[in-house]
Image (cartoon, rainbow, N blue to C red; front, top):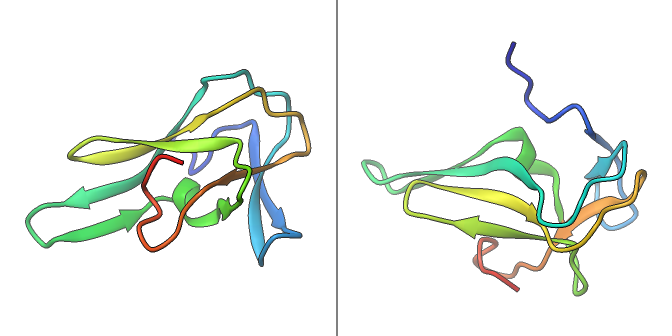
Length: 98
């Protein structure tokens, strides 16, 4: 069965900006949370998944984007506690490693 987000993540109001991505249970260090963006070489587009559409920026992130030529995956930089918002460091290009 398709799930737009892993069962251990949810979307709710963020203190950073708008809505954010939050852990509903503890998530271990270096957990691959799934694909956040697809890259379309045919059209030169980046397509966000629900996972990629709701994480916010932080100067002290707890996740990063693992990028290859076809997609980017969101990976934890440390253990994430239940209730904690997932964040990455991004600027003009949100898919750069902090």
